[in-house]
Image 1 (tube, rainbow, N blue to C red):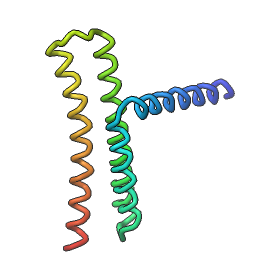
Image 2 (image 1 turned 180 degrees about the vertical axis):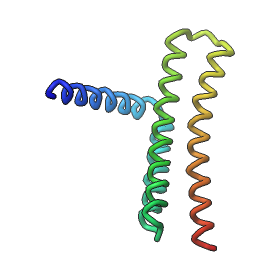
Image 3 (image 1 turned 90 degrees about the horizontal axis):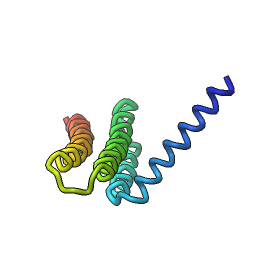
Length: 119
């Protein structure tokens, strides 16, 4: 049991180190954090259902996760080679697309919830 707790602790430390790395090296993460503060603040302040609020908060966290994965893709691609290659560009573009699609999903959720409030 103690061994399992140590493993959980190590994983938490490694995960936090990864998040801190992304925070320090990717300006876009800060932009997504600001967007999350605004979106989350509105989700909590507006008269939304618990499910709607949870969906919006979770969506924001998923955008942050996608940004972390995108950064991981960029780092490994750059580590393999700094040479300009189509495959490297495609990998980076796909990682960026994952962030954008996740953000669009949160936008769609917001629009759907706001239309439901009006109607």
